[in-house]
Structures are given as C-alpha cells and as structure tokens.
Amino acid sequence: MTKSYNIAVIGGDGTGPEVAREGVKVLGAAADKFGFKLNFEDFDYGGERYLKTGEVLPENASEELRKFDAIYLGAIGHPDVKPGILEKGILLRLRFELDQYINLRPVKLFPGVACPLKDKGPEHIDYVVVRENTGDLYSGAGGFTLKGTPNETAIQTSMYTRFQVDRCLKYAFEYTKKRNKKKTLALCGKTNVLTFVYDLWDRAFHEMGEKEYSDIRRDYYHVDATCMWMIKNPEWFDVIVTGNMFGDIITDLGAMTQGGMGIAAGGNINPEGVSMFEPIGGSAPKYTGKNVINPLAAICAGQMMLDTLGEEKAAKAIEASVMNVTANKIKDLGAGRMGYSTTEVGDLVAEGL
Image (cartoon, rainbow, N blue to C red; front, side, top):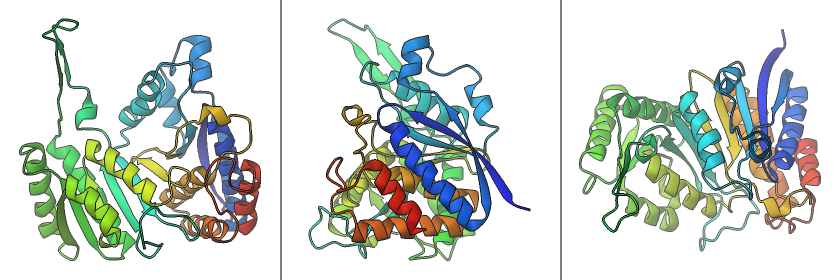
C-alpha cells in the first residue's frame, strides 16, 4: 500500500509563497519517483491575512495543524506589520503550542558554493546544531518596573527545567548515533558565568552520556569559543547541542559559513508530534513577484521534512540533486544573480531527481 502524508503549507509573506512553490514542486517529483503520496493543503497565515482581519492566527490553528504529518513554511515577515507581531504570533506560538522542542539546523557547505572562510571547503563544513527550542530567554518570564521613567528596569529571565534539558539532550545523543560520522556530541554553554542554567545542562549532559551513550564522545565549548572554532576549525564539529539563545546566534553564524541564508534550512521538531520546516532567510519583500529569489533553502527544508518523515532515500536524492545544481549550474546564490529564475532553479532540482 502506498504511503501517504498530509502536509500543511504556509507560504507566508513576501517571497515565501514563491520559494514554497518550488519546494512543493521538488517534493512532488520526489514522491512520484520513490512511490509515496503527498497531499498538500494551503493556509493563508501571514501579514496579508493579519492586515485584512486583525487576527494573526485563528484560535484553533494549532488544533488544525496537529492533524497533519508536517508543516512546510515559506517565510514570515511583512513590511506593513510591526516586527515581532507575526514572528511571535505565528512562529513562536506554533513552536510552543505544538511543542516543537528541537530546532535542527544542518551546517553543510555544498560543492560550488562560495565560503567566506579561507581555505575551507565542503570537506571541512558538515555538522549539525541541535538547539533547544522552547525554554531559555524565550519563555517570556520577566517584565518592566517603572516603565517610561528614568529608573525603568527591564528583566528577562532564562529558565530551564530538567525535563526540557533531558529531552533535548536525548534527541541530540540519538541524532549523533544515527548520523554515525564522528560520533561526537559537543555541548555549547557558558558554565563559567551562567552558573545555574549551564550547570544544569552540563550535569545532565554528562550523566546521560555516561549512563546511556558511552560510545559517543562528549566535548564541551563555551559559546564564545564555539564561535571561534566555527570559523577557524569547523571540521572539528559533528553535532552541537545548546540552549535556545546560544543556538539562535551560532546557527546564523553557521549559515554564513555554508554560503548564506539562501542555502540554509531548518526544522522545528516535535519527535512525537507535528514538525515544521522552513528556509532560514526572511521574506525578502523587495523581491516579491520578480521570480529571482533563490529557492534552494526552501527545497532543502523540504528535504529535511522527508528525512524526518522517514523517506530517507527521497531526502538523499533531493540533497544530491541540490548539490549537483550548486556544483554545476548556479555560481552565485544571491537573488537575481543565480543565472536562473526561481522557477528554473526548482525545475533543475526536480529534473535532477
């Protein structure tokens, strides 16, 4: 019997629908080739909907999306909507309500893609960051006192429970085991200053490693050292696990070393529920409708989605096709500089399957 997956598609804002469309095209070609079925349903969540209705998400949005096997997102961000409204109201709300407690970010330099690091090539940059996605400074704990006065005080609290830390570490150890490359998991923290939060992470990391994953090497790096080694010796890394705030920062640094936002993809993962996959770049509103934006990050997000759903052969085929395109077709990933239109790039990857 043919496997079938129901996918919610949120095109979103700006060029989001354009890159999502190319991702859907490639996903459809992969499904045809590898013998499974993808049923796509579109949702209009984004800036235009908010401007028309005043509602960011309907109350039942999370319940509706739980019915799907995965969510495929284009981009969120509208020039006529104040920053933070859509990001918090859609992205953060869905991450929290759907308990997508892992943010998974591969950092992989594809052949042919220009790297800003001297003397570094694809053989040096191939690792994954596992970022805890629901706690830390993002939990919303804090507030103001005497707001608007000279003595105004703002407090934002970093919070973690042992439960949150343990489940993130469990995922990271299992991912390192499945990846089966260097079998090394590095904890990125700041134990010398953040002596409560990262003491918890450090103890949990080593306790779990000693008891359950003795075959996996454990490393530790302060976050500032992590940033330095990501630039100087990225080949050291296999899998990095870290908290929400540090993960937010180091994954964007990693994205630049792999060629920029035009190639970087990520997943917001709930291993027991519905996960959401997206290109890391923004909505790039100035390029909307021009058919010049690079869709490869969105296509790679689709590849991650298939891998998470268990369609590993199809996922590997999409990645191989993207790598062929970057090696032999596209010489510049910048919008309007690819030598191909958005739709043509999607065609190249789909045909390469």
